[in-house]
Amino acid sequence: MDKRPPGWPLLVALINGRSGIPDARLVEAVRDKVVLVTGSSYGIGEATARRLAAAGAIVLLVARTAEQLDVVASGIKASGGRAFSYPTNLAEPAAIERLVADILRDHGRVDVLVSNAGKSIRRSIADSYQRFHDIERTNAVNYLGPAKLVLELLPSMRERGAGHIVNVSTAGVRTPPMARWSAYLASKSAFDVWLRCISQELRHDGVTTSTVYMGLVHTRMSEPTPLLNSLPGLTPEQAADQVCRAVAERPHNITPPLVRPADALGNLLRVPTDRLFEQYFRRGNTRKRTQ
Image (cartoon, rainbow, N blue to C red; front, side, top):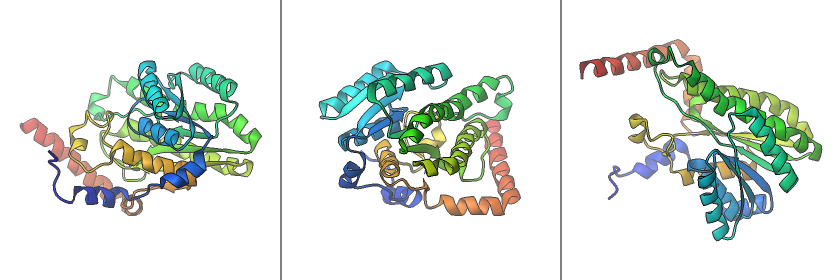
């Protein structure tokens, strides 16, 4: 039984927008294109890979878990699609070099890279004093690994004069920063800025970029945070619809409707906004101590 209050789907749409793409338009854009999707064993990546394969793309599945990638690939093939598994730990630069060498050997090119793999972490700074490895690991997956993958693919894309890179980022990059999310948001912001910088050098060579500032999506990654489970968010399939729009239409970015004003107000009223979130954080800690 659905326990969500009436109007929940409308609330989700108002917060996240309706930015999908019709099947026919997606087929036109990706049929027979080689599309690499990282983090494609679960969640947004899996749903995106299935949607792209259904539209006729040749989907290259990349994630750490070989067994789950094979499950996704088998499901796609059973539905008449084309999918190939490439188990890879994107936190290891040498593994990324081998991945790209294997893909270019097997397929000759990558038309579209969907950089979706990510690591989420929510931890207060007081609990992080002896956990610098959290910052290292989060950056390895959210920034350094994706940047290395782009660097490995760019020479072939620029040589062919064609290619598209889709960064599945987070709306948190565009909204005022919040306590406990420092490692995660810093790593996602780093790759966001890096990609925006290099895109200015790539467009002349026929390589374009899009960033999806994704709102909350209810996946395995968000599930461990109870606060997020009670908030209105997208399903993986709804999120994949936004990613597929970025693949097909190549917009500069896709941003939830409420994020743009929050971004503007956060910059205009930076000090009051920081103070407001500071009070929210303090009240949360006070409630925990009194319980």
